Length: 242
Image (cartoon, rainbow, N blue to C red; front, top):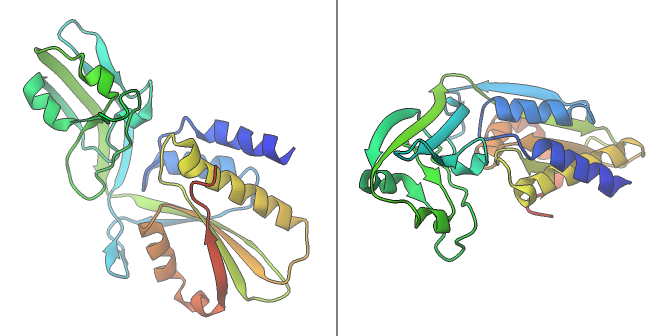
């Protein structure tokens, strides 16, 4: 039964376009929150966290590339991996030679769509199957990314299962990746099921489950919770455990 529930959670979360920030992360945490009583924290853009800074919030509604016949050769709504995560908005018509500077593929895995990000560089791009990239013909292409990058916040969540002692074990999984089943929906689903199991048991240690973006999420949590560091006895990062 546990495996079935974990698979259902992955299936529900899979279509959502997640990133370091944005509504995709919030939507995902709302779904997780149906199974765990999460504490949600919003950290405003520009907040200093140790020697890092919370970036502007990114959201996206649509993106595509159309050839000169009006056919979509790349469509974000078909697969959200098609857009380089954190791409700035653009609406333009480009020759293929110019467009190719913003196209990414995997020549050694021609039937796969790569996953790329541009978190800290204001640019844009599309990812596509290399076999489809090779089929593009010279001409003019309509390029559209309907996204926004503006002051907002980064969302992190946690669930604490109290034990006999306040000494803590941290279980962390990252929420920043879009439609990637192994990295890291597998980690999220294992964390949720482990938390649900421990909820029913008396435990010696206190277990703190963290759901947050990779790297900067951990930095932000540590920055906001320095008083807890001395209580941490150990931890696990659940990533790519599918």
